[in-house]
Image (cartoon, rainbow, N blue to C red; front, top):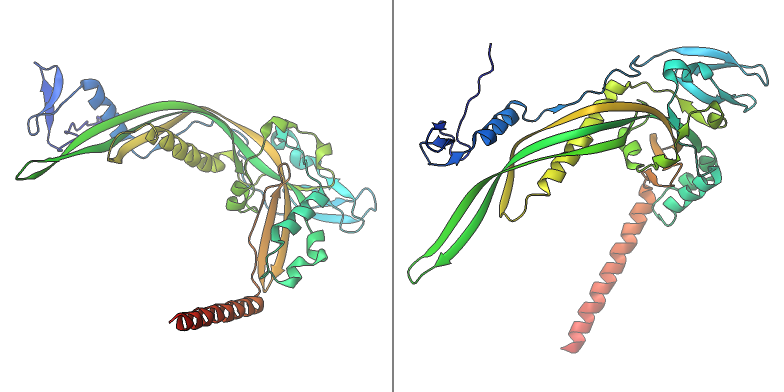
Length: 358
């Protein structure tokens, strides 16, 4: 079936037709006229309304693997059982760092790696500073044993690059008011505002590990990719890493959402001088898409308190820290009891002073 284009007046919704005299499309109901070019754009937008289209090509899409494999430690000879996605770990018996080259060779080889800039001691200090002064934090959470379990992890990421083109249409209004000796008048003018524009995006990071919570990994940004270097196994020694288990096509939806939000914001920021602006429709098209596979540095601490796991993560390049802090209910009860007592004392003093003034 051929595509049907339904031309309607953007202002009143009535049918419009081409006016040979005006050489424009004209609404017989409200009398507004529109150029053919503008209405063609509006129809194209209506047919692609709300859609984001992209072409990322085909790249590293063998998907998630599962299961375990066994390796022998070259230092002590012990057998080590690993997840099939494990890239770097350490021997649980002798502590010897182990890099499993099979998981980072060929198609699985990262394009770049961003080496750690901050060491373990820096990460421990940052964690201490993060919860320093938090009076409701449980004492167990501050123990040295918890801090010693902090691990340096190379997290797999996809870095998306593309050119994006977007268009949007807005309903906008301007209001004028005046009065004479008898009446107050208000006139509202309605406008159809169109915007279009393009932008290039480079290295949009999306974590490629299902084990890592996306909100934490997003919160660790930004990373400075000028420090990225071609991948070498040597960077992995002494750290922990898994290869990606979320392929690049699956991860692209998160990159597309960020691009769409950015483009919509950029276009909206160009609309000025109106009392109200409401988006009617819009679309985003991404082209020339490429993807890079990268390992990015993150310090991770998992600790449990009251049967709940708390995760802390620190950007291994910049030191930015994110995490959720538990609350000691006993300390919280004492704190609020003291606060209530102090507040009551202050109220009593104020009341007494008021009586003395009288």
